[in-house]
Image 1 (tube, one colour):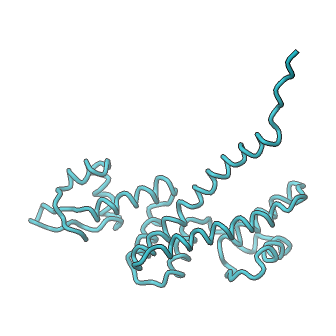
Image 2 (cartoon, one colour):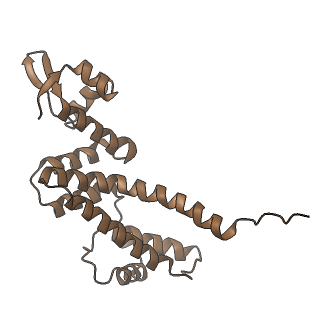
Image 3 (cartoon, one colour):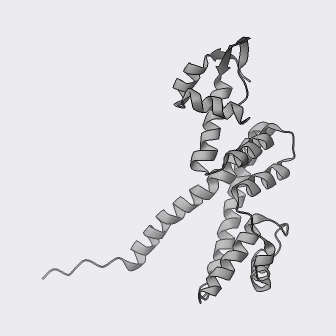
Length: 214
C-alpha cells in the first residue's frame, strides 16, 4: 500500500463513502486494513481510496454481489496468470447456465459462429449465446439478416479492444485490474453504446421526412 496518512473519517470524506460502509468492506475482506498506529487507530492512503472506488465500480455499476466482488479482487491481488483472472472475472459477472437446459441445435449454431475461436465448452458467454438462440427461435423468430453472425463479428472487435487496453499496461497488477474492470464494466459500456447506436441508425432509416412547403 502507498503512504498512509488519513484517518478513516477522512478516507470516508475523500471517497464519499460512509465510515460504516468502509468498515463493512473491511469485514467482507474487500478492503485491506489500514496501517495500525495504535490498538484503536489506523491510517489510510491513496491505495485504499483507489480500492474503494474499484469496489464501488464493481458493485454499483457492474452489479456484482459482495461474494463476486471479493472473488475478482482476490484475483487482482493474486499472482494468477491473466487468462485465469479473465476466467474468474467472466464467471463472476455471468449467470450460471446449465448446459443440459440448452438444445444441441443452439450449441451447434453458436459454435459455428465462433469457428476458429479458442473457447472452452463451459465458457459462460458460449452458454449465454446458445440460450439466446434457443429463446430467439423459440418465439418464432428467424435470423433473416445475419443478426447472430454480425454480433459475433462485433464481439470479436470488442474483445480485441479489451486485450489492446490490457497490453497498454506494463505491470501485472495493473493488467489484472483492467481485466476485471474491463470485463465488468465493458458489458455495461457496450450495452449503453448499443442503445445510443440503435437510436442513431433508426433515425437515419426511419425518420419522417419534413413536410413539403405549400
